[in-house]
Image 1 (cartoon, rainbow, N blue to C red):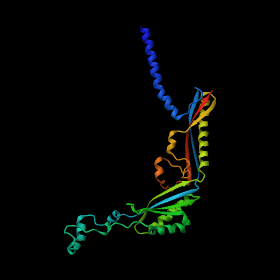
Image 2: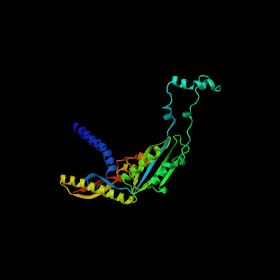
Image 3: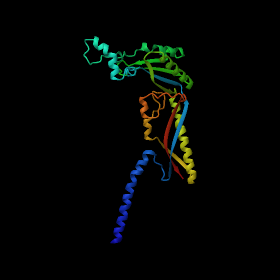
Image 4: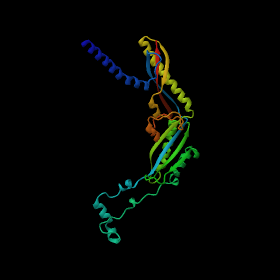
Length: 280
C-alpha cells in the first residue's frame, strides 16, 4: 500500500511540475519562433545603421515675454506700492480708497502675428533659406501667446543648422518682448525603404555572428533559421510619412526632438530580431 501511495505522489508531482513549465514555454514562443527540431539555439540580433540626413526640419517656437517677467521689475513690497500709488489714490475719485489701480504690466498682451515675426523670417532669407522653405504657424487661440517658425533645410550639416539657429536667435534678440524659448530639429532621409533594408541585414548579420560563436562553444553546427520581430517594435517608427526619421520612444511621436548643437546631421535606425537556429 505504501508503494502504491508513493507512486501516486511521484506521478502527481511530475504532472504539477510539467504544468508549471508550460506557461514558461508558451511565453518563450512570444519572443522566439519555434524550431523544427528539439535541439535549437536562440539568439537576438541587433541592427543599427546611420546615414547622412537628406533633409532637416527646424522648429523655432517664438513667444512674447509674459507679464510675470515685467512684474519682476515692479515694486514687490506693499510699502513700495503704496508710496508709488498714493498720489493716484488722492486724485482719482473713481478708485475706492485702499484699492490699487491696475498697472500697465497687468494688461493683456496682443497676440502674435506673422508681421511680428517678419524680421526673423527676413534674416533667414538673407542667410540663404528660400522663402518657400519657411512656414509660420500662429495659433490665435493659444493662451501661451506663441508661434512656430518651421524651416526646411536640404542636405543639412551640423554647422549649417547651428548657423541658421544662431541667425534666428540674433534677429529675435533685436525685437522687443519676443524670445525663442524652444528649438527642435528633426532629420529625415528620402529613401526610407533602403535604410530599413540595410538595418535588417545588419540585425541578421549580428544574429548569425552570435549564433555561430555559441554553436562553436557547444560543438554543434547551425541548421535552418526561423526569424521573428519582438512585439515592442510596434512602438518604434518604421518607414512612414516622416520618411524614416527614427525616434527613441513612443512619446517622441508627439514632440520634435530638442536641438542638440553637438549632434551630427544624420538619421539612425535600429531593429531587433529574434532568431532560432536548429543545431546538429
